[in-house]
Image 1 (spheres, rainbow, N blue to C red):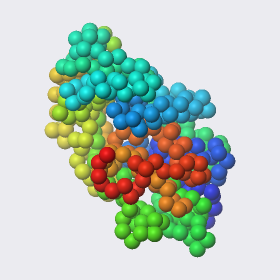
Image 2: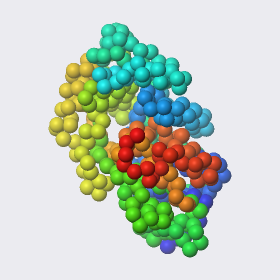
Image 3: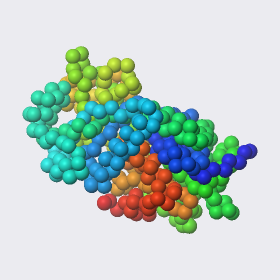
Image 4: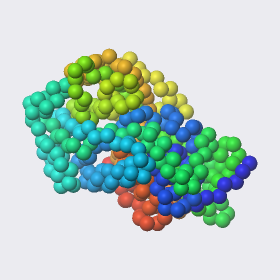
Length: 379
């Protein structure tokens, strides 16, 4: 058994944990990152080579945060010397959007956008079909999660952080000294002034520890629902131009983005948000049903003539939903809990890393909407 002593121990080396490690180590703190699997594994939510970055939020809080996130993405690219974010533009359309209100809010937050009729949109993007007005904004695109984790863990390690793969944390408690004591399945003990939980879908495993740190015998985390989310890659037909990222709300919420290097040919990754089976990290099987696959194939066949509707590849991941769709980003004593989830957190990863660092150092207080004890009411 070995004992490690650091300023901050981070549990989980996905997008949020690795970005937190970079931000904290760059501020001069000693950091250990404890990852149950190899760094960059595909068991959780942060694997793959493409996620969308969008600024089309009807919620003023997140609309403002997208601008701050973009600044942090640019900083990360500058410091790592790696292009992580590729501009494609983004389209939002469908009858479930109030496009005029969304356009006005984006404009109020300094996000240039165009409000187009369905006909105008189809002329510009003949590889897509539209039934309603559409909003297009240029400062949208895709980023590479796996390269982001490599960049942030490399920067953190260069600043002195210790990256500890295959180190599963099984217990966390307050040591007699008032520090945090973390215990691994291998018998290692990590003593830290602060601990950060960026465990994604594994957060429920730490609910008792979170309650202990809060001095509460009852759970303080809001109820969490874990779903297995599946996505499919469709090749662009010969001669078709690349397409922007998109969200189409028409009863269901369909989304898509360029596939990046997930597949060897120009393609789009398409999925249906919130249609995955409820699961847990222990029983999830990564199995994709024929019905789930066919629903996306049918959508592509009807709405995306630029794509060959036969999937090239498919994958599954986990999303962790709060009842109100807001993040969990809070501090209780020496413990910071960061579950920036609900299926829309990845685009904020470098900003979340900075917000975690602010909570650890006391540079900022928790955002009220992101506190753990906000309850299950929707905003």
